[in-house]
Length: 242
Image (tube, rainbow, N blue to C red):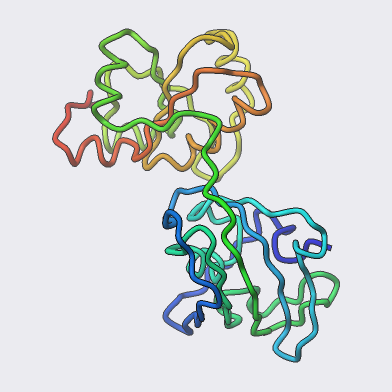
């Protein structure tokens, strides 16, 4: 039963000030260091502090992948895996505030207010199936006429302006609801072998969309502006005001 990871979309909004993650390096690594925005492949085993094991990818023989900083795992994992080197194994002691908080999960397999202990091994930093690009690459691609889609909301466009000549097509509204017209509009305008650039505020939403378009829809040339319009503006690049 995939208790730790199976609750996709279940985010806990506890303050990290209330308690701190503890970790110990059990096995040093020698590879690259994992950072926010990286997709990582890990093996893990989780126990309650009583010693009762509640989940293990090792037992299943199937590594787990997630993107650091995307909010799809508990905060203790986000904090504990960031900074690990490939090949490193860590013990993570995660207090309830950085875990599942006051809610029992897994049919009570993890009781409310549980402190959790994990052993996590970083197997690989997985390259995304799409291409991340920086500001210089964005400029070159725009000069070559590659279309760019800004998938943010109208409020965000008004707040920051947009990179010219962005096509404005909202993916999620301010309440997180998906625009049902997005895919129809996008697929009518962009062929599966056409190059296309995606931009949002910081690159997180477009990263998820880019992966979906490549892995689920068969697109082959999707480019994500890795740091979004925030870094574009910070670097002094122009935007069109709305």
